Image (tube, rainbow, N blue to C red):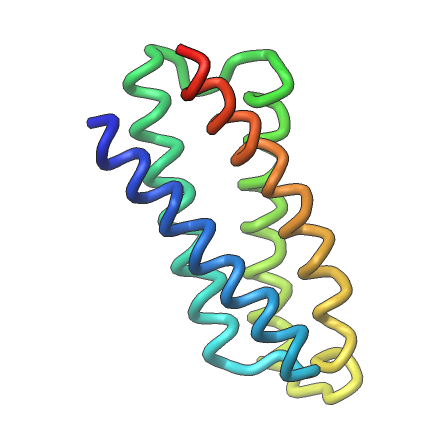
Length: 122
């Protein structure tokens, strides 16, 4: 189960990083970015679910647990907001969306890094 958790969490990092920085580099939100955001969220949710089963608890009240929950909620909001932006097809919203994406990505890195450090220290 640990192997699946690692694969999904690492896949989330890869997909989310490609989506966020691809959007930043291209300067405008595109449909493929949205697809990558949703895949990243799915991978993160699956990886987190496996980790929760391994640890015996879905949420621990520590830095990693709280920031992890915040990160998943922000990723969900981010993906929904990206869907709305593309649905509305507003060019200004599409061009400015990446500012929000980078903040969500940076917050997501906190539980990813804290989890990796905690995992290596065991």
